[in-house]
Length: 188
Ligand SMILES: Cc1cc2nc3c(=O)[nH]c(=O)nc-3n(C[C@H](O)[C@H](O)[C@H](O)COP(=O)(O)O)c2cc1C
Image 1: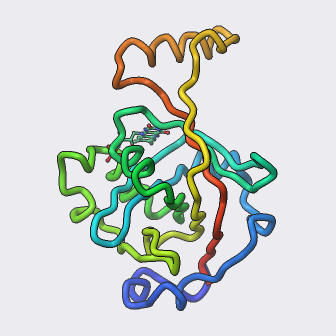
Image 2 (image 1 turned 90 degrees about the vertical axis):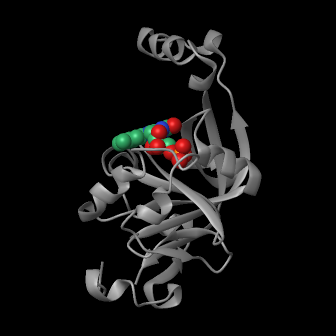
Image 3 (image 1 turned 180 degrees about the horizontal axis):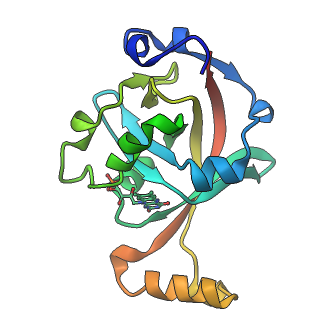
């Protein structure tokens, strides 16, 4: 993060905080970005949006388009919002915001006021999607595909154990969510 800090970030608008880059210019290591730093997925518009922390997925190419994917349990309210809105953001934060990110994984927005309680400052992107001023990287996505994995298509023992556990209850169904990257923003 360059010239911004905790104090003035809240006062600044989206254009002052972020600049657009192309997907090819993302220079983070994907394994650190996804698996170690984690991310926040947000769907909805300014009047109503919801976020959760995620820790699995990746970045790649699908249908010849730069794409993100993530694995969401079927009962996540954020997934419901993604399906309704069909656009969403994946936001990546500096390490000092881990606690706030984890808070978004501590309860569901379906039956709580967590979006009002979270100590992050919401911001609207120029396309109207929601993210947070404290993010260092924002990837905006257009929903392309949601896949429900078939347990018969799992091969390694570890993967079989995982999917069998997941399919014990309907609410535990896992969905793989793919989104075409429409915009990428980084902190100025
Ligand atoms: C570190 C961490 C990583 C998580 N990763 C995922 C994930 O990849 N997929 C998922 O469905 N839930 C994941 N969760 C759980 C959701 O973030 C959590 O259930 C959240 O409260 C869902 O909120 P929602 O119902 O408002 O969408 C994770 C939780 C934590 C603490």
